[in-house]
Amino acid sequence: MKPRSPSPQKTPLPHEEKINVREVHQAIVRELPEPKELYKNIPWYLRHFYAILIIWLVIYLISLAGRYDWSSFDTPMDSLEAPKDIQ
Image 1 (tube, rainbow, N blue to C red):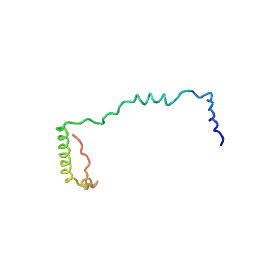
Image 2 (cartoon, rainbow, N blue to C red; image 1 turned 90 degrees about the vertical axis):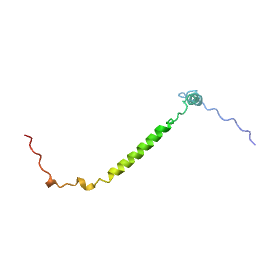
Image 3 (spheres, rainbow, N blue to C red; image 1 turned 30 degrees about the horizontal axis):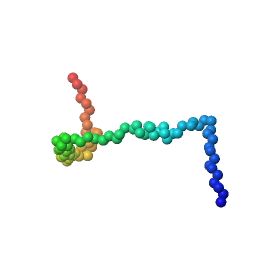
Image 4 (cartoon, rainbow, N blue to C red; image 1 turned 45 degrees about the horizontal axis):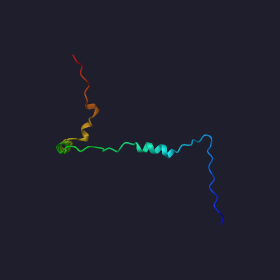
C-alpha cells in the first residue's frame, strides 16, 4: 500500500482575506433577539363582546339581504325625466 500523501495546502489568492467567516457570523447569530408572541391574551369579557358583536353583525347583514333585488337598478332610460330648472 502506498502511504497517503498529505493534502496539498491551498494557497490563498491575493484578493482573498484570511478571515474565518463562520466566526464572524456566529457572533451575529448569537445576538439575534428572542422571538416574541404574535398576540397577547385578551380578557374574557372582550372576547365575548367581540363574539356577540360578530354574531349580531352577521344576523343584521343577513336580515337586510332579503330586501335586495338585482332588478332594482334596471330602470328604462326613457322613463327618466329631465332635470327641472330652479327658479
